[in-house]
Image (cartoon, rainbow, N blue to C red; front, side, top):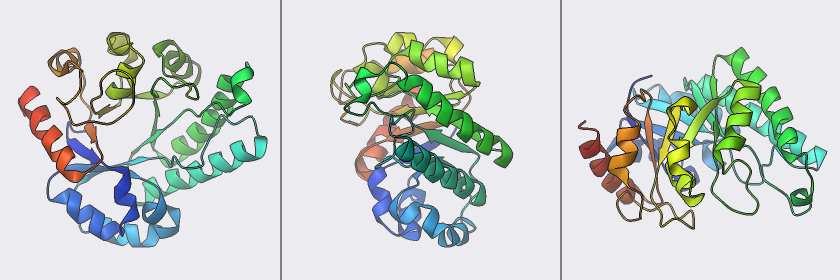
Length: 253
């Protein structure tokens, strides 16, 4: 995988795929596509046609809305896994070889259960098997520190990685909300994908780089061994471009 700078903006999926791709293509070397709405499975034929017109690096992020692979409701868990399996097939169809997935959430009653992480593991085993058949790398993402999130701490992520032999999507902004950024930057975690955005240490507000409190020179120095893509996440294209300029200065691109 090349060391490209990719864009990620969830609101892009509310636009037709061709329009969204052209917006990203103007400013970025690649795109991490959120597989929702007009960029989901139902629109795969259109997406296949459009990606044949670009040489951008493409990755995919599994859907987020109404998805919970760690749900204590078995029907919801099964449906969530099925939806993400569609995403893996979509990624294969458009030539994306990496898919990032969230480990799931605590539901209101799930917070009182002690097996929620095991439920997530069950789902991830099914997804990893599908990904391997399709030749796709599956990356599990650390989540922000919130009452409902799994894997906001490095020890939880490490357990999933070790038990399931999964790759890591290291989200720097999420790690900072958990006050464990330096632990997440431990070289032994060895991420295969990285998300970049800023915040002030509490809420996951996806600020442009430099507008929060994260020490970006320290982060980039700690990632000198990393050879994969950098995915800049943000709320607007203009904010993504601003972050890209800062990042390229830091990595001497």
